[in-house]
Length: 304
Image 1 (cartoon, rainbow, N blue to C red):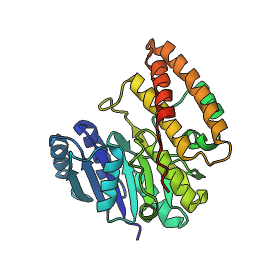
Image 2 (cartoon, rainbow, N blue to C red; image 1 turned 120 degrees about the vertical axis):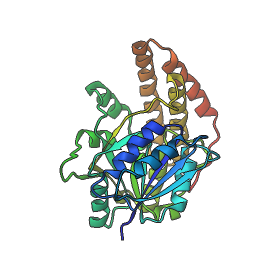
Image 3 (cartoon, helix red, strand yellow; image 1 turned 45 degrees about the horizontal axis):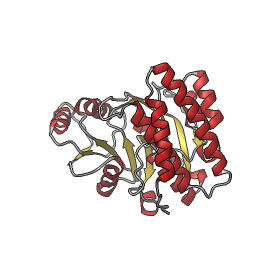
Image 4 (cartoon, rainbow, N blue to C red; image 1 turned 30 degrees about the vertical axis):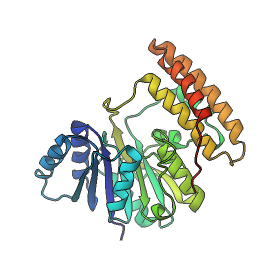
């Protein structure tokens, strides 16, 4: 059947959400339903989306959940999955703009490749420097190896694209067959946010097998990186360090995982020093040290 449900969690970003929804409504292949899980306390986002729907003759079914009591990104995603009727669940962040072929390419991948269980696309407006790419590859090894960097360099937004095997799928640009969520659950107990996506996709790949999860180089979107709700430098570095250590503790059974973590922490410490110098802000370095302390102290619950 290959019906697709698009799920967008949102919080206090009516302008960004309007741009994201507009890009969904302008797709060459519309999703069958659009599910918005709005955690805002007011109705500005709903009013914006309702107005947009009036401007299009053909639209996907809109399921708008205005639920301020929902706490956090993971819980919002779970609510979307619970109400979704599609065979494929597509997660989108509320500050992205899809290329017009995004869903057309996504549905083609699942239709023509029955072995595909999960797939994510690439961001076309994010460009890393050569030095950053080299250092990223140098320090992200073993359980932290991330092929998404190479996928972004090889993006082919207007072409056929290629599928690259990857157990790391970016959360706000990912699609899964709904059956995945019957076997693998979101981690709502270990306080993930920045790494919730790779934790989920890693556990899904552990359950089903790496060979069923891919990055597609022609599922393209722009990520506008809205400053609303985004933590300051110290907070971002603190959370990143804590979550990487939490991720390690959950997946420490993998070969060489301890060595991988130590090597990654060395790299991240060096990166935080450079970031502090370049930004003239001590936040990255202090956030790294606090995050290291938090991560070491944190007790982790391991999920299946």
